[in-house]
Length: 570
Image 1 (cartoon, rainbow, N blue to C red):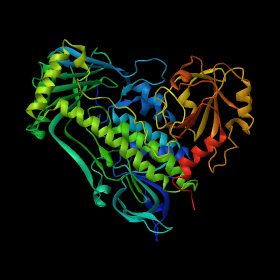
Image 2 (image 1 turned 45 degrees about the horizontal axis):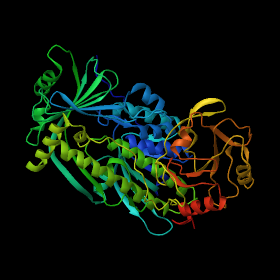
Image 3 (image 1 turned 90 degrees about the horizontal axis):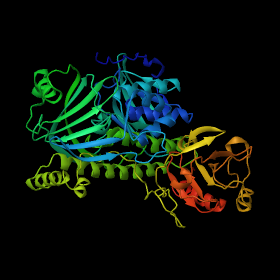
Image 4 (image 1 turned 90 degrees about the vertical axis):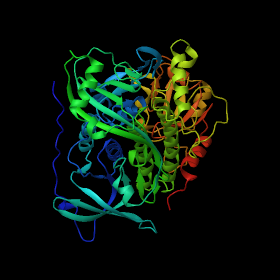
């Protein structure tokens, strides 16, 4: 056994960034945590220049964000590190909740088969950051360590709108300008405070101890949560298995606990021995005390300054919504920002980033607050309700669904997004406009593959056909001019051409089309599809619109709604 040693990243002189007047960069990201790095990788995948500034020289200390949900893994797939993360992380789908020593509730995050990624993996944040840094550097992102942004000045008026940053380094301080600034500098966000921007919500009066413990144990790879366990009475405990024999254990302490005292080994070790037994050898890797809060900024966009991740919103750790919602922020933001930087859309498109992700933050805060109120009731009535639910759940199945030890992170269905085209025809299932796409097994060129790996490369039209092609479908395709493997829908008079993806139940020999084979029928089932069913997809794998037949006029109108309604570039 041995504790993790943080890598030290090399400092690079800012001499090439210093100039009078200040240099102008198209995109600067503040913060080389998971969200800022995800944004930088996405920018490079779109061919955008990006400069990342971070005041540290290493990855985070301690496990911090631990649980990465299925949707985050699908985003990391597109960014290029999901295989590595899943290979090192501990995959799990099952969570168990105990009252004292009795199990009262169990859930399965992925109850049905046919998904590439598990419901969740557990992996220490420092490992994820290492992977993201390596990927960002591989793609050519310019990451500057020990570059602390001490001030930001907004210039929001006119055609020369930008932000000016003051950066402090070991070699001195300099100013630099950004056409666009993404702020992902964490929950305490110095930039948010410097700009005097509000963040509102609720701070919970309770304290929890995190202990990262290195030990060998044969516990299953599941999430275990105890209410009132015999080894820690009248409080709660959470156990997660991580990579490299590291176990994350969270002990509820109560608001009156002294943080400095509780972190001392002579206080932590007896708690662990009471839980694990005196005979089990273990080593402490990291200990921390935390309180938590559920709050967010009123607005995520302030002119050319865009906030993402914990800088924009915070939730309690119960439910694993912090880093997971941050990855979804970056996923939503970067395709929109890419179009704006390239002059393919008005910057008003970025208002929909703020609206959509503010909605998602409110949803996460609501669910997180409910979990936290159940776990740490602060009134006699709430505690009585919680205890009665737990007592009933021991013997009565109806009560088990009321047990809330942290409803796990799920992606938001952006059903009210102004980008969507509402259904005009009857559909069943979950793939409504605004929904994050469901995955399913497919074949491409005779090789096993996954649906979500075929999308997320710009706007796409997904057309379901039968095999062989029916006369109706052939007639629909007659209006579509095909060009190479990208299959743009030339009939769409839009500044951005969606590409065509055909889904068939068996192989089709159509040389110039992107064809995937729905080998198990799960794509058609999950998308309630029949021959002719057409979906318009966003670059971040959300549904924009769907119809029962391909009609290029309706596709064009939906593209105009998604882009033109929020303005076109001048």
